Structure formats: structure tokens, C-alpha cells
Length: 144
Image 1 (tube, one colour):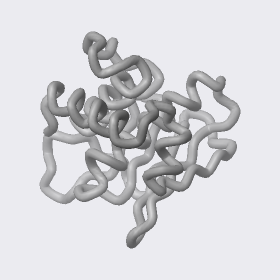
Image 2 (cartoon, rainbow, N blue to C red; image 1 turned 120 degrees about the vertical axis):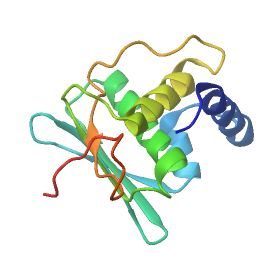
Image 3 (tube, one colour; image 1 turned 135 degrees about the horizontal axis):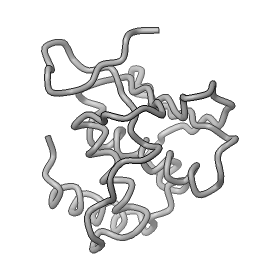
């Protein structure tokens, strides 16, 4: 688990290093391949790492603001969690895991500034993901 202060520092470092807080530009600079697509109801994104490549597919039917939030959230998983899990499935259901809370905080600080207050309670971004075996404090999504 990453501490909130650490997430703020990571965001500040990324923004300073790359000169932007724009999720689209950062994705490009960090080689996170974005795949805009129509997603089934209840699914707003899928993050996959394979070998040295990372991909984030997100719902293009969402508003521009939501799409930016989704991509910022995907960047959070990419930067904070890719070494622990290669797949995150983002669903519109309650009960976020530790990793989801961290990605949500990352997205919030990226979009609104590292000096802002803690993110609000989860809303649409409370997805679940695949977790490493034996990781009991995190939600699990059955394999598809």
C-alpha cells in the first residue's frame, strides 16, 4: 500500500519531470498505449501490461471529463501497481480495493493538483481487478 503523501509526491514528481498533468500527454510520454473503445455496460476500462508494453482501454461513450479521469486512473495503476498485477478490470460497482483507492487518489491529485485535499468518496471509479494469489485485503475479479 502506498501512503497518501507518497502518492502526492509521486504525482508532483511526474508532473515536474514531464511538464504536464494532462493524462493524454502523460500516457504518450510514458508509453501507456491508449485504446478508446465502446465498453459493455458496467465496464469502463481495462488495463493490461504484457512484456514491456502497457495498454489502457477506456469507454469513449463517457463524457470528456470522465474519459480524462479514466485515463488518469489508468496511469495510477501503471505507475503504482504494474509490478504487482498485469490486469485491472474497471467496473461500475461499489467496494474498491486498496489498489483502486490508490489509483483513484493518484487520478485526483493528477487532475486537481498535488496540494489539494483528499479525493472524495468513490463514485463511478470503484472497479475491481485481478490480484496476486494470497492477497486477501484486495478485491478480486473472476477471470473472463
